[in-house]
Length: 268
Ligand code: AP5
Ligand code: MG
Image 1: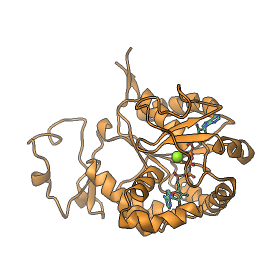
Image 2: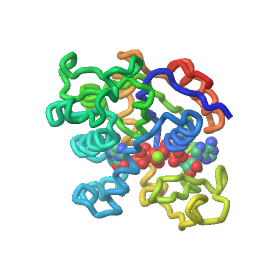
Image 3: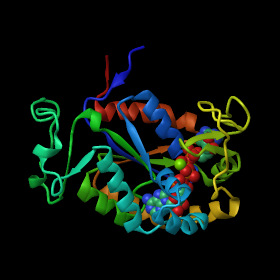
Image 4: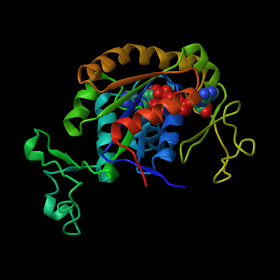
């Protein structure tokens, strides 16, 4: 089957209440548009907690309490991940000529423009090629994080997922995850093929430490405090798009359509 292709780089973030379906929509977008990759701030943090890294140890108590980790901590994690994946490059550390191992990689292809850091105040540069498209799930979630991210790589679409909270709380109680991959299941909505087992690896599924109704309320409270200034920030930049729906199945088709409209999808 022909897969739709993007014609320009999508640099998208998903914003929404805990359990609204950010992870679910990210997976679906990646299936629909194979050029997309994603970073989930929550998955990155949980990986650090699991591996007992110094950062993970510091983050764990905050996460268990449903509070946000400090901006500086999450920023360090995300910048590191963006760099490792090659979506941004730090021009002060790696001069372009050294970085591009195969000569004309990006310089000579017409549709792939490296934005020189000299034109921006940032020390980072990024590519406009569709293959440099990404989705950030769960970052930024404060206006401060958004301002800092903007200086590193400007986002061009902010998807605000909006679902009433009484609907969301029911889902959280039925969520099961495959920790190593971040794959998410729900016993009523998208149950695994075999009870308690990951579809792909067959490994056991577990519950997230913060998926307890009381902790979820704390997460929702923190979300409400931070979200308005965040949305305001992106609204001013003219890149905020809100989608309403009571279920992920209502939201996905609208999201695919908007994505196609914004990023000039071609069927090849
Ligand atoms: P994070 O992991 O990002 O958690 P969250 O924002 O609370 O969001 P969730 O992952 O719980 O929900 P989701 O929207 O991805 O929903 P999902 O698709 O799984 O962050 C965790 C913690 O890390 C934070 O509390 C904070 O401490 C820290 N952190 C992370 N980022 C940070 C940052 N930038 N700054 C500071 N701290 C940060 O769906 C939920 C469930 O619903 C699933 O079971 C799913 O299958 C089910 N479902 C989805 N759609 C439907 C449907 N239509 N009907 C029924 N069930 C459905
Ligand atoms: Mg998630």
